[in-house]
Structures are given as structure tokens and as C-alpha cells.
Length: 179
Image (cartoon, rainbow, N blue to C red; front, side, top):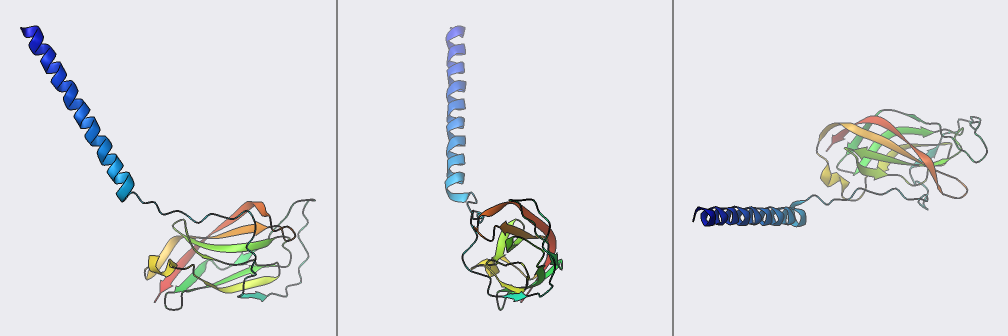
């Protein structure tokens, strides 16, 4: 008789463990379908965008091109590490220079907490950028204040083929968001 009671108790424990396991699986499924953050980060294209940055201004610095090996490339850059964003006109105000000495076209991105909020068109060597429009909807993700986890991400592209270069450059910046 004790043996039957022992077997019944083991079966009840086994059934209870199965029920708890199923409840846990259902909870994880509900979370994954309804509550998980599925926002996708912006992907970097293998080829440069077709449009030239409309806000790029000539530098006229007359520098010599960087000495790079055949098939290689080099970029030179100058920038201020502070950027101001106006939520009213959805524009980032910055000071970024892409000197004549560079051998690659670049695309400049502004990222806050790893999320891209602005991206330029192609900037050829010998140009500078003082303002950049925010990506659509980016102003809704920002609040007035200062962001220290921000970066310029400089994407390099071959000026002849438009093909993405192997290396990106990241520079830490501070972004101040104003109304």
C-alpha cells in the first residue's frame, strides 16, 4: 500500500512539474510576441548612397592627399566634439571637416545610445558640414538635455566604385538637445 502511495505522490509531482514548465513556456511566448523590444537598428549599406550631401560646403584647404598603398584608402577628419540639436527645426548643428587630403568619400552618422538619429549623404574630400537633418521620426525619440553616450560614425566609401571600405571610424561626442 505504501508503494502505491509513493508512486501516486511521484506522479503528482511529475504532473505538477510538467504544468509549471508549460506555464513558463506560455509566459515566455507571450512576452516574446507582445512585449519584447523588436526595434531594429539601422543597417549600413555596402554601397554609398547615391545623393551628395546637400549641406556640404567647400573647405578649400588645398592639402596633399594622404600617402596610401595601392588599393587602400585613407581619411582625415577634423571635428568639434559638441553637437547641438534643435527639435523645432529637426536639425543637428555641428562642425565637421573632411579635408582634401582624404582619399575616400564619407557618410557621417550621428548616433545616441547606439541608435542612428542623423545620416548625411556622400561627403567628398574637401568639404565641411555645419548642419544635418535628423532622420524621420528621430526628434520623437529625443528629449531636451545633454547626451554623453553619443558618437560620430564615419562610414568610408571608395569614390570610384561607391563600395564600402573595410573600416569605420567612431568619435565620441556630446549632444545637447534644445527645443
